[in-house]
Image (cartoon, rainbow, N blue to C red; front, side, top):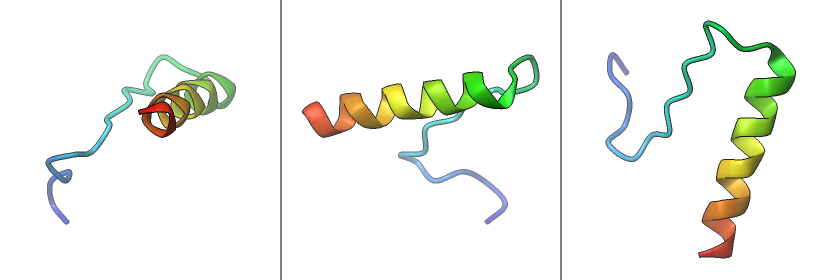
Length: 35
């Protein structure tokens, strides 16, 4: 798709390394699973 889904979680990774992106993703997933 040319644009993100309406419920997409967007991470600006331009200033982050892969480990930081992974940690943000995991924190988001944990939060969603807790709800």
